[in-house]
Image (spheres, rainbow, N blue to C red):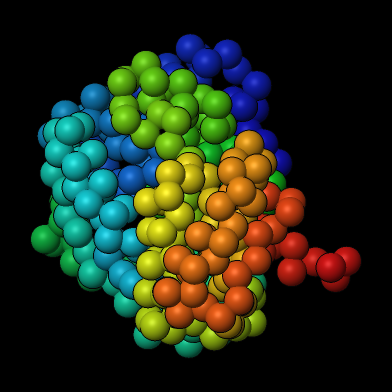
Length: 278
């Protein structure tokens, strides 16, 4: 259910966000370099000054390009940045890749933050993450892990949706204002297929190819020897026009077969596999 704040005008949501952040002793921000967590980090820095630290989980499911962007953004915002090595692949529940994979990923992060808390920030600082109201209607088991570890979601409490965080990012001149949505590399693997480091590395290479070819919004879905490529509907025509070149590029990444999805990119596309109707 959406919070009542979701129906407020943007200016009131922003005031509510600032009020809630100002009540904190400090903030440890789970920072992925996406637009949501970047907007949250910027708001925390603007409100709490130096009583904020960004924590990025560094694992095989995070592309090196995203890690470097996180470092650059934190520096630009002026927030201290702590890169925390996590190992969700050590968790059976994560490797098994059932419908609750994101739960095990977030749990790994929050447990590691607790273990290293003395190095990261004072105990009295709240741990926060960039969940928004749009996430409430989707399959997001990571929210369960957040609740279990008392991790707060200030953007949800203030009623922020995707349009709001993009507006905030534009107003703050953040480079991610129009950044396409991104999820960890494991989200490219069908539920039920076990995840390993080699698989994640292959997906990262394949998506680097798509990025180098100039595509903006895409996913390379991993189906064993088959790469199923989703691109934004507006980019489909160009993808089909260069299908042979894309095919050769992705075969060079280790795939035998390459398919372009005629429906194009859709967020959470693998979640359809969790429904008995599919």
